Image (cartoon, rainbow, N blue to C red; front, top):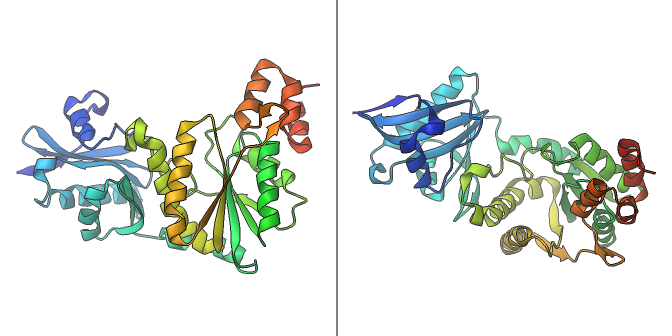
Length: 330
């Protein structure tokens, strides 16, 4: 007889580690709560709650098809309700998606073979796009989009904006909102807005939780070797399903990253997955300042090394003024 129980000491639970590893998962970090599905003393299923996300969902491969997923997911839904959470999201392996769909969860985006994004309750992801639909209501059809972190904003970012501005009637720049960068989001957003202020058909807006965040692809989810391709696949799936229709986007621009294999895999996933959804991907080569590739990482390196001549060559005036105030550079 199976039963649900909180998993004790998950950080040091060998049975839990083995169960997660069988699904190419690692232990979700900083989870708010968890449930284990047991038969006797044997752990045969697990799931974690972090905010309104169900994470680390797994059922022993030998026990699937026995209705155990229903018991586990129902238990997690009830656990969330006791915490006052009535809208839930889950990113799971494609093999789990039919089971969850049968329990009433709705598929939002499919990034097979890596993952599927589902939700339960509301207001749902589609309703969350209403603010974007309102923003786009009076804008020209066939908009372009750039998704940027700008850590910090460089001449390379500005050049990408200029290219998109010349080639499209309207351009949305989505600022990656999650604060996991050297420069805080509020500063990155302001530098992007100031850097694009003279481009009249370019609008910079916060990207929200569905643009390249730990929500759209939590780091525990897959092997490091697959992570960039998996993140690109999920980003493309969510972008095509939610963001592009709301903002009436037909093109997405990205810059190449010759020194980062992971970015190359990410861009490749976008290149393979966006055009079949009616979204053209434009990949532009990185520009140089003299003999130096322009990148935010090069700017951060220059700041760390005190090479302010290099930094000045790589950033526009608006960013330079900000950096002088922040670091006292002369």
